[in-house]
Image: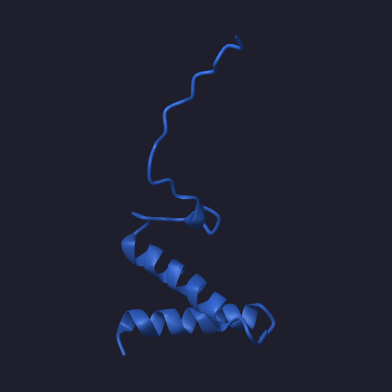
Length: 70
């Protein structure tokens, strides 16, 4: 097991403990821990907040022009 995976595992366990040892949320704790550990490893180069992950835009669109009624 790599050091990175061990760090994620330990942080996920801490998050589980902090949230009252709720069962059924292992994936959520793992992903939160992974995000935190990787962000720390990258030194904040590529931080993404929880809400921003699904809101990334791939293409910029030009503003639409309004048409006049005839």
